[in-house]
Length: 157
Length: 404
Image (cartoon, rainbow over all chains, first blue to last red; front, side, top):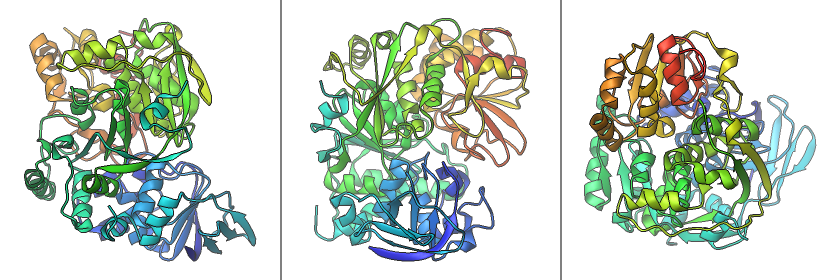
């Protein structure tokens, strides 16, 4: 899976409450989550996420199991999230929802174009190509199908 | 000797395995999305409904017509699938499961990050998201990466004002918020036997705050006695000499009351360092600190006195509330001026019933103090039930060992 987008740089330990606050969860309207994504971190961030690759610090997505955190990012137009490490439930949710997550040690320059190839296992940022840790075969298959729902409804049980 | 995760999942750390799930649960929050994803999968297959649970706990009773409509839809879904349904007032999902619905050696998955709580019984219990749960409903199984294990080795026994919650904060402080990411914590050492099931539930609950997939105790005589009270026979899980890929040691006898300072769970200091800091609300409850033992400890300190600051008490389950009513603990709390609310998560996730205002400070027995979690612009300090009680009486942060 290849992709590219402009870099949006974030810090370490971004928790799921910061990605989408608990007060916005009670709805089935996904656009609500996209509209409030990162609101408590930086209210100006949401409109900049369309076509973005989030370049975060370690432990991105820690905290709650709320899948709305991934859905909010995807609905807001985020192409992928790159970080040295992810909280495991967020990481698993991202694959299940079909949002590429890249485990890598890449620096971040705001707004520069970032390219990645998850199959080949690299990310290019700051003029430098760096390795991305491989996903398991199952996670690759789920992501390639577009998420777990598509993976399971494709006939496999 | 294998780690407990390796024994239960039947493969060495680092392997990917597919495993049938023994029990799986969702709550009113994650259930909505899980149901939508399950409908979308479209096979119509819902496996083992008698081992699947829907437990209403996040916003109970419903606070708005939107929440009420979502809960109404979920009730109908539970009826249609035949899954085990626990309506408003039952309690926090992890606590309801801990009351005779989790056994040693089982693989338990919940659509809530604190599912690791049930590792207290020697189960492999871990949290997933809603879509993962939909897949588990449809297929009855899921995949796991067998985790490496960090051993948390206890020596001695708790004494004085320190409680399991203080130990949990010490563990999170020692490992940091990502110190055990993708790993399991196995609580062991000779001091482990001295910890009650309530203590173990609190310790396993906060394992996820270190990034861990689960926290676990091997089942022993304490586990057996607890589960026997629910008429359950308990397989024992003798440990022998364990080899963990990382270890920390904690002397329970030297443990002191601790606080986690806002907005990080791993910024931990002795309560004594913040004594006198004024608080606006004390919150006793949640899957970390709302068990009977917690209410009893709190009541022992406030009994016959009056709290100096608004204090919200939310029993973790109906069984906890009933027991507190039967023993007089409930009367003690109400007479001391506490506001007692319906069993459930309460204000922990900032959705209703005790949310704090901008600039307000809450001392809470919960497991998270992230920015804006319990209300925009508020600050949350995490502490044990006894510290919460001493603080409620003083109206300011106070150690249970000091300023009563």
